[in-house]
Image 1 (cartoon, rainbow, N blue to C red):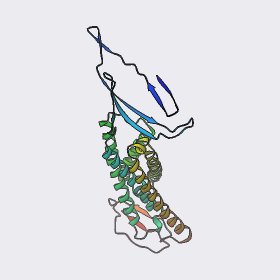
Image 2: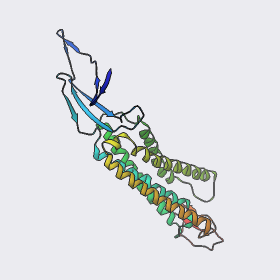
Image 3: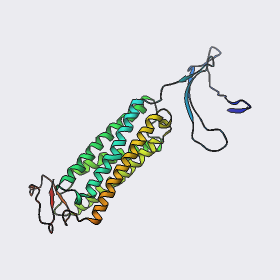
Image 4: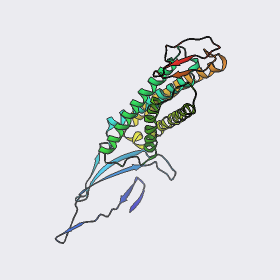
Length: 283
């Protein structure tokens, strides 16, 4: 139960709890004398507003003393590294890799787009696995339930899709002949890639808005948010540049790029052919 009130110079809130005793020899015994409490204080007035102060208290049920706990419920260093890894991966590397594939006709060097695409995505997946592992360990050490809120659920989905992509890329069929399996592979690879990119990008925003980031890590969260929006600006400029180039400037070749696997018996060096023919990127 709670009872609040106040006036004049201030206000106060009283909280009354009931806890079961363990009976021993006819006497009540508190088996766990210290109870941890987390509370947040909102703005004054009757309207809705964001919490302005947070604290964790250790309440001794034997003598009634209250001690504020300064430690974070999660390991700060793990959470910071998690945020850095995910912001780099999904704020800049994945969008860059996607654009390399999307605007490949305007990237010179034959198969350069493919190597850039693959490098960016491999590094992004590595950072994602590292960031995911760090936050799972932090939650486990804090004794928290895993994947019980939206940011964590989306993060788990992104993690699964991110690991699926490179594995699926390894088993890609040959570009020629254009079989049904090859068409299905391209469609699924693109669908998962675009979906994963959007979810990862959006989940950075939800992570930055978590109460943990706005309380325990407010200063770090503000810096990370600024870095993220710098990444957004860079990606936007790059997208506009390639989009304008695709609209107003001809591609390097009229035909589309085709990718052939190294294991293909027709494997050879990249051959530049006249513009009226297709250029094959043999990977």
